[in-house]
Image (cartoon, rainbow, N blue to C red):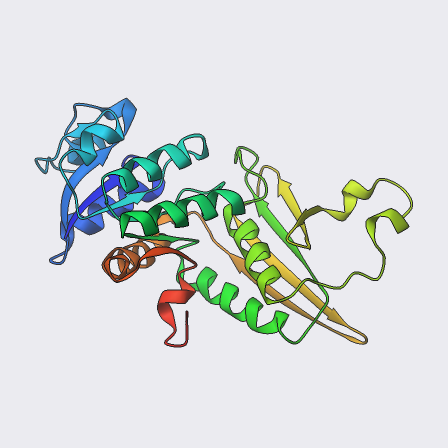
Length: 266
């Protein structure tokens, strides 16, 4: 399978390049990274040359007709990159964050028209399991809130993981709040952003790595589900490559790696 990697010199991109080059199931067909354009991607990430030159933009790389695009780039170009692949009927594994529910609806419709698949979500295995467990809990517990944490420099709020989690939980049911926003006294922004009925709180501070936590509560008891990641970007590799293998059996958008891990997934 010929793979093009968007954001090939980024943290996750470097790990993906190395994994694809070492794999018997994949061939590195293209790599996109504007600042390293014209360089061999191997030397650009500090390894031996591999014969694949870095493209300055995605259009140039997609012209080679890869079998799949795995995209880990900046939220500013999230729609541009995915739509460029859809226009060429190239399936996409979307690791870039920052998408809204409306944007996902647009991508789903465009992918169905093109007859291709898209997969999005947090591609770390434990994050995918947290999402599945949270959806299971939401079916039984009507009270919850989401907290997410990341480094001060992360531009999108809340994180794509937290936003997607809130939106998918909202499809299970809307959480119950004892008081509506207009019934509270004070600055109601402190209740968090409302995403599909879920109140989501984002923390951006030095000293924090990415984490997402779902707090559930019933009278006299509570449940906390939390996922944390350290500084190792390789945790996203296996899930991304699993999605790359399965995306060719999908038409439209699948949200969440957990939907590729369980037989009962839609």
